[in-house]
Length: 171
Image 1 (cartoon, rainbow, N blue to C red):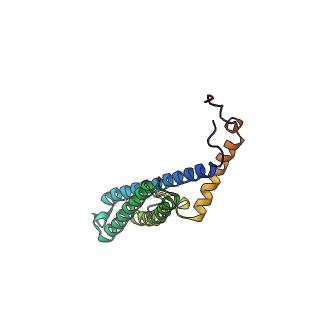
Image 2: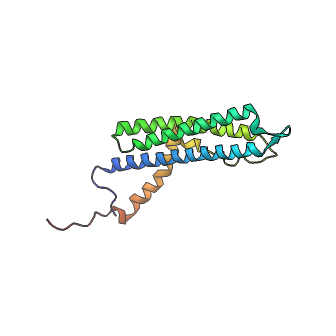
Image 3: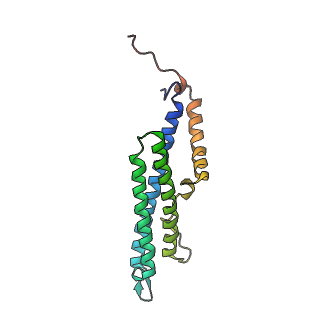
């Protein structure tokens, strides 16, 4: 099956990269919300000085910052999705803004999540792994391009995908 023909390949690739970027941002937002949920539950069960740590004002402030950052990130994700069918300039501006806001929020949520959890006898920080390496960084863009290159090489090398489409009925 022919994916595209003529000079439209760059446009198809740009659309695919945009959609993949939005999907990765959605993954980061979901990770932030999961981290917030896990840390909230943890603060209700973890006791220090005979009381749940969630009752301590400092912990409440950390969780509030995480909550605000995660919801702001979700709003920027919605903004990027809403602009995904716009012209290139508007679409790219919305995506870039979302990458910045979501990248910063991911750092805050993961950092605060680790702070809230504390260190417990080598317990891994489950649920706090947010893909910061693929968000809002040049290295992230290069990493994504590195992942995409073998896929495209496979498509280009596949003789079935390079065949021209069958001729349609003569009109």
